[in-house]
Amino acid sequence: MSHLHTHSVIGVLMEFIIFSFVICSCILFLGRLYFTKVKLGSPPTEFNVQIDTGSDILWVTCSSCSNCPHSSGLGIDLHFFDAPGSLTAGSVTCSDPICSSVFQTTAAQCSENNQCGYSFRYGDGSGTSGYYMTDTFYFDAILGESLVANSSAPIVFGCSTYQSGDLTKSDKAVDGIFGFGKGKLSVVSQLSSRGITPPVFSHCLKGDGSGGGVFVLGEILVPGMVYSPLVPSQPHYNLNLLSIGVNGQMLPLDAAVFEASNTRGTIVDTGTTLTYLVKEAYDLFLNAISNSVSQLVTPIISNGEQCYLVSTSISDMFPSVSLNFAGGASMMLRPQDYLFHYGIYDGASMWCIGFQKAPEEQTILGDLVLKDKVFVYDLARQRIGWASYDCSMSVNVSITSGKDIVNSGQPCLNISTRDILIRLFFSILFGLLLCIFFSLT
Image 1 (cartoon, rainbow, N blue to C red):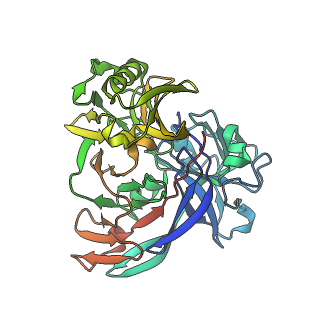
Image 2 (cartoon, one colour):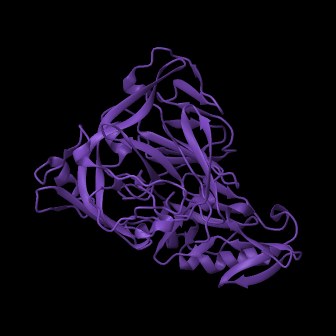
Image 3 (cartoon, one colour):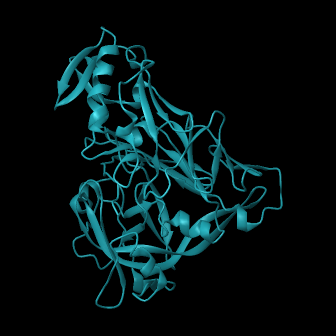
């Protein structure tokens, strides 16, 4: 199984609180990395892990890893999972049904000591291998009006004993990756299959310089939400992209170039920084943007990328873009959703096209276009919804299929429910608060 993923560098750490979780905002320059803190083990150890909807497994670095970084240039302390030191840790043996199930979804293998192992590689060429563990995973639960309680559940996760590529670089090091994909061993699948959380999760990624956002197991409710069905039987969150519009004009593209399969289609992936278009669409998109920009901007090539020098607001100088999906759902993009700010050149702001040519036949929607929108991954109805939203604002979250509403206002939590008797079976809201960072990569 392929895993979509990119790494980015982060900078200075700032914090603020929203219903007992921390949102970290870190800024260096370019490239967004969203991460959250999770707790595993007894006693619990806290880990900083990247949020990634392009892969399935939650994994953290094992204390036995020989080549894993021991320090990070990202302003965070690295932690290692110490299996012998956790009172609740358990191993997954090769004969365990869990191990046989993951053989179908990852490159799982049996180790010499009868531990169920894994090995997979990400889209940026980095990789990790290790073995599966079981231990206690901690989260907060909404049990009733204004009541937030600490809760926990056992989960299966990966303990990384070897890493390669960017994962080994101290300047980019984190404690692991939190995969929110569709596989059986994603935390979403594990918890929802036991009725602990609803089969839906949402995120709102704040895109301005201050960063931040919210990630919850539940459905964020905002007006104007549109939905497109997920392509069935696909390993990733694959949508049917039908056409692309620039300044109201559709690109002369055959929809077949976006046709979905195991190796094609349009993937929604928070682990990817920019956005990648299949080659048939990429050149047409660049030409359409260049033909639509104001004559007041100056085109320039920087490091092989198409950029523009702008002395005023880009909203007035660049066209709008629409990504049009099956089900009649369109994603409207502002200039800042397909451009990134590269700095100052000759006294003007340099903005560069953030859409890249895909190295393979998949279009990948990364954080550049996902930011400043609520995204809802409705696994029960097999669809993804989105709506433009100011992610610095509070959000309403449905945790019981639309019957119970939680308002996660900032900086405190307010709960407004229409049904006070909320059973734990339906009621756990798991808020993962994200960190957005900027780098030169």
